[in-house]
Length: 132
Image 1 (cartoon, one colour):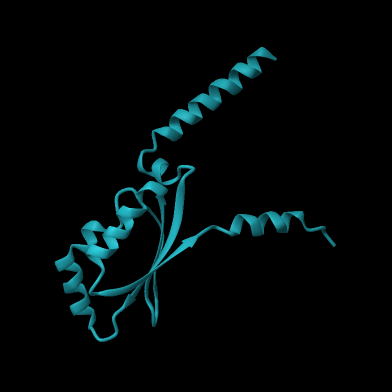
Image 2 (cartoon, rainbow, N blue to C red):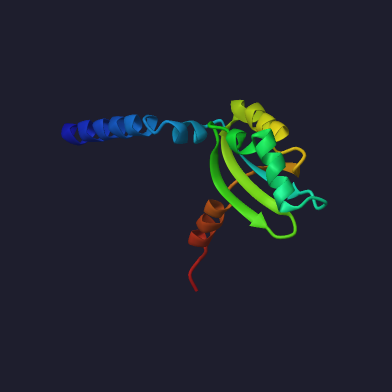
């Protein structure tokens, strides 16, 4: 019995240390992290070339996403522009906002939405349904 307890304790400790050593991913996954979905709506009066030049001039690609953010998804939504979902520590929200303000403005109209993952809830409900 004592051996099992020691094994469990040591395993938990090692897993915790391994998790802590993940660096950026660990910071983005901390308990205070938030998921944000950002709509980068292309300004319709500009061509893709002019949008790219504005992004280059603003150094958008160097600033976004911030190092503290983990990109969950980055899609092109036809007729809208780009839709980016990031996970970021709550204390880094200002950094995310400034990266967009300094890098994206002039090329995109932007919208931010707090986001959460509903899929685990849906899966759990499916598992709880009685089988016919």
